[in-house]
Image (tube, rainbow, N blue to C red; front, side):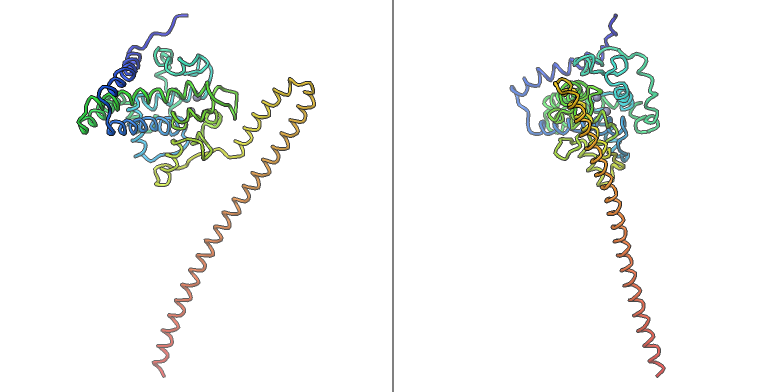
Length: 372
Ligand SMILES: [Zn+2]
Ligand SMILES: [Zn+2]
């Protein structure tokens, strides 16, 4: 079969920036050395690019796991162009296809089934999708968003303005133009690219599958450090409408922390989460399946399988009972709170009425006293 034609602009861009980051940046670090200003600016710019992709492109637009204030959407739209990962519309369209057809080598744009290189970067270097790229049928909802429509229309200009403008401005500010171009300009871009590309490649190859093995996505705490929390990819593929990827408090998910913190100041709302019960059931289902596979190989398989099935049903019933009761408890707690508020309001009114009565009584006393 003939290979798809190479997209030269992307290939040259990726190769050149990588080469500069791998050769010129270390050379400069040794020969001249980077100052604190460059180091801190690079880390902040890296975080801005990464989170614009994970919190903006991915969890906000591709999956609609929460709503964001227009201010935050502008911030993400500009950060996404700075990250140089195409327009949010295009990105979300690819990503929705990825979830819908995950691991399907023909329909998943970065199918892990085609290997590490392909899912990491190879899929962008050749024109594999052709005319599919102009069909945004799966992101009609996003096309109605005027911030995204604007970003899509002016993407190239925005990408050039941010990728040249920000490092040049910072270089002018610090007085070290070359150092800033190499660090915030090139190193930041290359790291930002590959860290987020790991979500498509490594997060589908390396790690555990606690929730489902019906697709290749994996949970990997180590990878979460490089991918702003997206390393919990097994969870994400089964519950893609959850704004969290690392659901436990100790799991490293700065994207989740950002979305949650922003909700305290009204920048995000309607954060969607999957009910705890569904997560618990998915997990024990997976454990049952694994245990059954092992038990099948043992001499008393029949007996073991029956026992496992029985225990599973028992645990399932317990889980359902527990969450049912928990739900009732929450309802009661809410009612109690309402009643408490009502009592407080009643007390307030009682005090007001009492005060009014006392005043009227005093007034009456004064009035009638005048007639004595
Ligand atoms: Zn996703
Ligand atoms: Zn994936």
